[in-house]
Image (cartoon, rainbow, N blue to C red; front, side, top):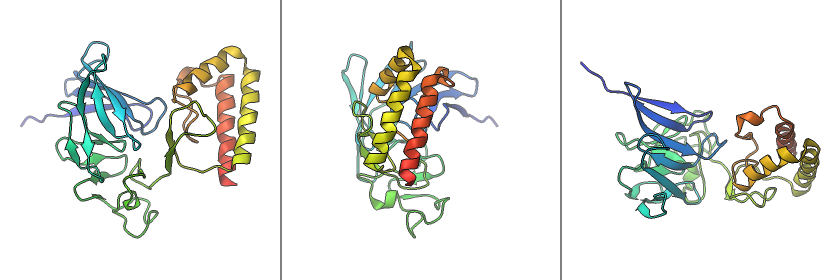
Length: 250
């Protein structure tokens, strides 16, 4: 009996960037927001990004893909969802991404790191591994608030979608922990001073990444460029993260 299987290759988080068949042939490639443990899918290709036809994704406030466009910006298709994520209209041959979860085309369940979500039932298929962190109903999705809440990992409902005030030029991101303004302002001032001490070249690299909205947006996500690990700027950023966490913890 012959069995057909696919191989999924992940980045440093929970994002499947390559899909291959059992022979190792590349079938699909995805590009995700850099540095995000669970990120928005930015592009999707039938094969390698460099040579294959590629879709580019446009998202709503939950990170759901609502439109796909070709490289010339022509519309390839639109995806629309009911409040709890049931697909209403979808784009042919494109993945279905709702609230940063991808739908399995066979089971029609949305995949999260720790559980599967059934949009038709408006509930998870298994109990919350963390117990009653979101209340007594351990199967409820995002505390029954799917319009403005997320559960990225299938563990707990998190935060609010907004533009981080400590990085005003960055794109809106999901920020889980409200920070006391005075404390975080002082942390930001210290960070700016540390960046100046690092030298102009490293600072320019960091500021360019921040302006594209790829880092300095979440308290636990490092700079995505692995080449910067150990550099002066990276160490300054790590200290900034630590200072912000101290602010959040009071």
